[in-house]
Amino acid sequence: MDRFVYTGLPARVIFGYGTIDVLAAEVNELGMTRPLVLTTPEQAATGERVMSILDGKTGGLFAGAVMHTPVQVTNAALDIFSQSDADSLIAIGGGSTIGLGKALALRTDCPQLVIPTTYAGSEMTPIIGQVDQGRKTTQSSLKVLPETVLYDVDLTLSLPLPLSLTSGMNAIAHAVEALYAVNANPVLSLMAEEGIRALAQALPAIANNAKDRRQARYDALYGAWLCGICLGSGGVALHHKLCHVLGGTFDLPHAQTHTAVLPHALAFNAPNIGSAMERLRHALATDDPAGCLYDIASTGGAQMALRDLGMPKAGIDQATELALQQPYANPRPLSRDGITALLSNAWSGARPGAA
Ligand code: NAD
Image 1 (spheres, rainbow, N blue to C red):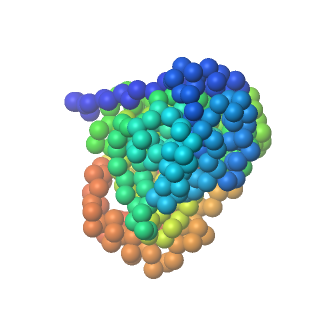
Image 2: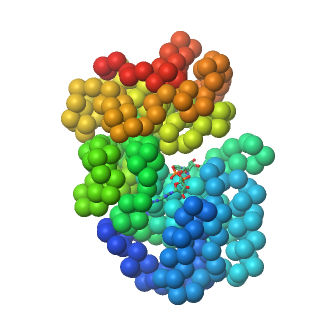
């Protein structure tokens, strides 16, 4: 890190308990007059709540967001956006809803106010992934970066424990890789270490009491915000590449796949990332960061084996091949044996050895 580049991304962030009470003021601040409200079918009631807070001054509610941002869903939402004369967007939900908002912003360049209710971190990034006819493509554009992000800890209390854990591990993965990605820099390393520390403390407490409003849910969302900045302003490496390949090839669930792979990707890279490991030991208060991350997730009840998520055993060779076909910048050079061993361990769900 003798030489580095840091690119800060513009976003207004409101954070705390009950911050939904400033929603109408923030909508005004952004000059939105008819925002289309977006969410998933499962969170339709949360979308209705936003509608009632804004007292009908919206372009309507589209509660049809789904995972992976399929273009057909975007087109359906775009029709409603045009028909209702909407001038802006409010996305309330996890990465799937936020992805839909980004897809609409990409096409309309309208302002977005985002209210994240998971820890996935998409709200802090200019990245959008979309699926068209079974093919996922990813691009980066400042058009999709939300103007305002309103984090309300109270809205995360309903996040079920399994998703809380895996979503938190998904966030930690962003920060872990920002520590050793090619464009790592000291500012992001500070945020990464703090984000990992906050989430690693919060997740076991949430596993004990998923409705722990006071500290654990606050810390988890705070950590997720910092980890999201790491993803948005930093870079990624082998872990994210593998999760992308696994998700796309075997249709594995996003956050769960990150959870099962992260300890093994970190154990693989550990010999080549001395200063990042030092930060991780500090953040996690352990000599064995990879094992510690595995323990946090598995003790909380997360599934740690890719085979239990639906990956066939033959997929280990297939995914290894795909990962090697388009090599990704990674601190430890990729080898067939190394990737196969990493994926075999993640497939069976074994605990990584001490790093
Ligand atoms: P998700 O948005 O798919 O949500 C999973 C389920 O949980 C949904 O049914 C949702 O409605 C529900 N849910 C969300 N918050 C809830 C709450 N507080 N209470 C009750 N239910 C709640 O899951 P996710 O893991 O947040 O997002 C995954 C998607 O985000 C993937 O498609 C991934 O590719 C994308 N993603 C994108 C980026 C990026 O920078 N572009 C970053 C991270 C993730």
